[in-house]
Length: 155
Ligand code: CMP
Image (cartoon, rainbow, N blue to C red):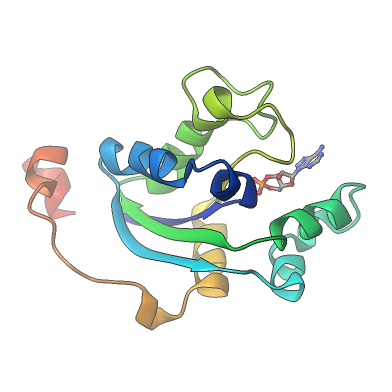
């Protein structure tokens, strides 16, 4: 099982799309193991987006992401990182495939509704950057037997 980080950005909160987008991942069969709302500090965001610090959009991105509280989630499943990235779609909402979250709801490069970790390694770093260990929940879901085959569900 893999875990990945999702940040429902200020545009998703402003537009009232958090529940609808979260349901895409839930209905796919991903298990929510962490969920909270937080006004992210500029310092925390600058560290998260460190690899973009020289990009022309960096300052605007930090301003946007810290403008109002975001909703943060950690979801779990087999190959969760790549499954979630595919569901989210390409960065630029105007270019994202129809049917993806961004392809359905976003018209922007920046206001693209949701951040999803890029790789398994990055997901581990991002989850520990935004969540305390005590905020991640271990529990069994009965529907796992319907989501996966018996051998997959055993892990
Ligand atoms: P995200 O997946 O969170 O990763 C970096 C973010 O930077 C990206 O989504 C967008 O919100 C933003 N971003 C990436 N490229 C651009 C761009 N060309 N112009 C403006 N914002 C961008």
